Length: 261
Image 1 (cartoon, rainbow, N blue to C red):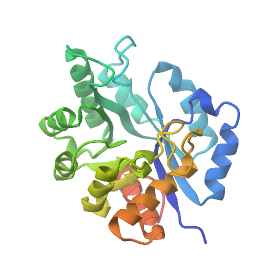
Image 2: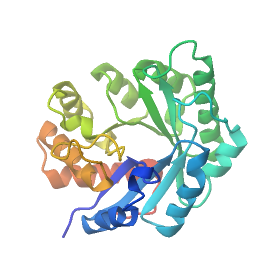
Image 3: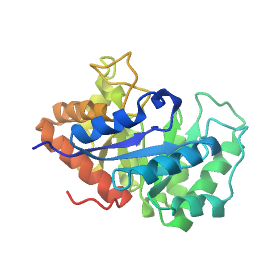
Image 4: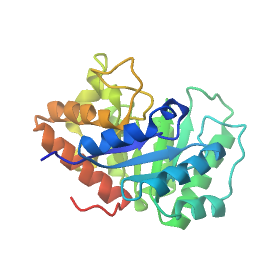
């Protein structure tokens, strides 16, 4: 019997899946995956996200918020974001946060957007999916100020320090790794994964990006999230299946998925 696992963060509405989206979803089922959370990052994602969730209830779940990289896009208000977060199959608000890599100061608009998304998550009673690129510490400070740990949150595609990862856990959050955990240069991330409590770890692909070893250079897809679990297992000295199942259970608990594991 295949061990169940979950990709906690992917982008199945991306155009990179236009040629084989349904086949990629079938590969998820064939591999033993019991869920995937697919993220919408702008208004153009709303309709395709709704369509994919309606086509695959109980397998695919969603989240939506305007991404912090996009200052030019329309910003929904708290009520709209909260209403969307409570639509069928929607389980979180995000991804949201801070990006100091692509965006440069002054970034008051980005901080305001982040706080608005946190307020929407609080109104909806949903957890948050956090994007923090070159901004992990700054994002964590806002999360602590807003007491986002009460809602639950995950810092996705984690690339920060051990101190920040421990701060995420202390604030009530989870840490999620992508294929970046498998890259040869990222020994520091593997050390962090080894030290963070297993019950606070999630796995993800961020597909179609960040394909893990041994699939680097290819378009990423949700089934590859198992390679992230493999890297966590190695870092912690666990069986591979134990890491798969534990991270799946963590994802179910955080997002309150209707899945028994």
